[in-house]
Length: 86
Image 1 (cartoon, rainbow, N blue to C red):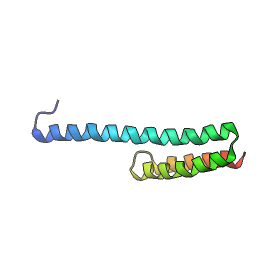
Image 2: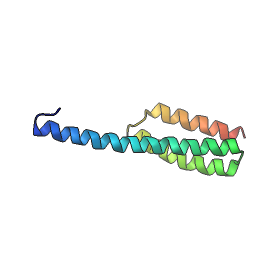
Image 3: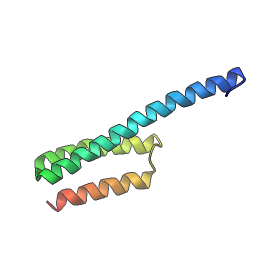
Image 4: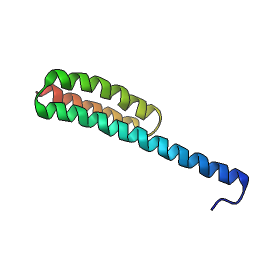
């Protein structure tokens, strides 16, 4: 465990950041699932609206460094392809 005041503070910060990042990653997954659920249900209007919200969350997640930029682009591309295929 951390011995110095500096290392104790860094351990606290790391735990806070881990929890924040976990929450944001969960939000990212939730919004992707909303799009997939709407596509599966066959509701194109709802899927497009969910996609619009998901793109915003995906971009924010990538900009914060929680996921790589290429993964964000791939997710958006695949979701959009599913909507277009409806």
